[in-house]
Image (cartoon, rainbow, N blue to C red; front, side, top):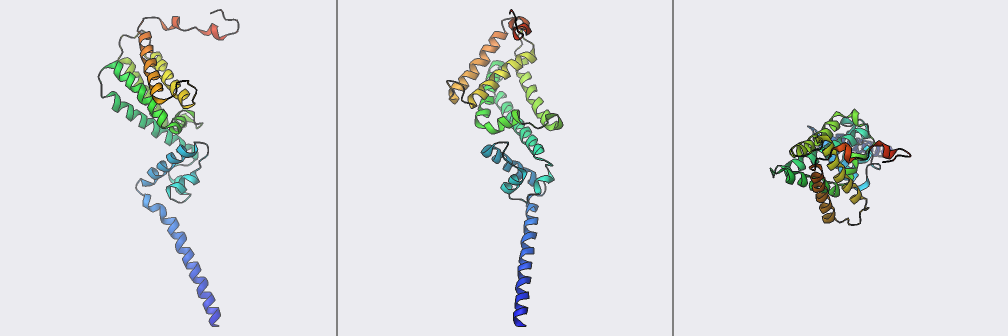
Length: 240
């Protein structure tokens, strides 16, 4: 009888210990109440993206990294796509904030634009995984209004910088896209190691030179339609 009682007590102790453990695990996310959970998840997700890339991380791994239960991320992010969209949005906001802080240090239009180009390049080189996430993720962008707002906000900042050059003959939108495409291309090619002179100082010099050359060219008064080759060049048998 004594053995039976001892065995029952032992089993009850094991059950009690197990229940206490599971309750503690379930209660673990409580320390992230009042908005801290989302912040912790984003921080963990950014670290995972930087370490393993966009394609290889999961919500379960994000939860593990953040130290919460595997169901906790779903309180804020119903899917991996939702989390990726938020990461991209936050990255655009961070870039926007950094650009704004830099260009506000000068009132001279050329200096502001050239400084913005360098900051954009540095952001890409310092945060290659985030940069890839911002522009190459496959989530449905239109389904995430915050992402669209952050993206268009960056375009508006670029337009502001271009509009300050009042002597350009090229329309603001076209001029902005020319400058952006150039600096973004330098960043992408630099990250891919495709440029012969690919050190950061060399890439920064190239970005500065490209910005200055483009602005100078757009000041010459050459109509954009005459400066472009045109559709015929792209078609078979084009003569231009």
